[in-house]
Length: 147
Image: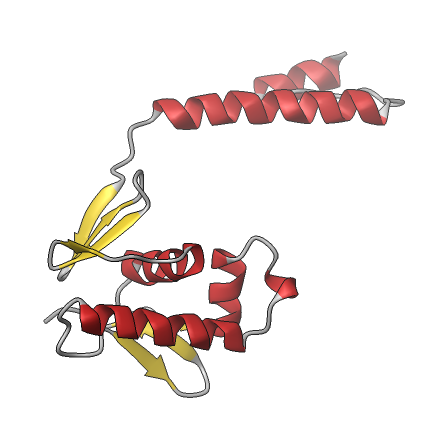
């Protein structure tokens, strides 16, 4: 009992005594996750931000270039969102796959190249004179930092 009380007092959310059933453990984990989701949904985080000539609206899954909404696929949106969150930061293909795909092992890393190529075409049709997505040979991609 002392161990349980000390554990809870120093910050533990719950305490499971051995022997325990896997179903009970699963139910306790789900309860903690529900509480954390509820807490996360109550915190106000800015979901709209601007990066250079891009405006990102995460709640509407929309990215605009020079106030013109881009017609992006799910993965194009996710890749551009990742790059826009950290302009100048270089992401490897593997990092982009891990962050943008639900099941990154189901696709090849070169799939990222195809999506980046399509993103560049869409940006060009939206009026981009320069390439905003930089290729770092043998490494990956980054969003150009604004001067």
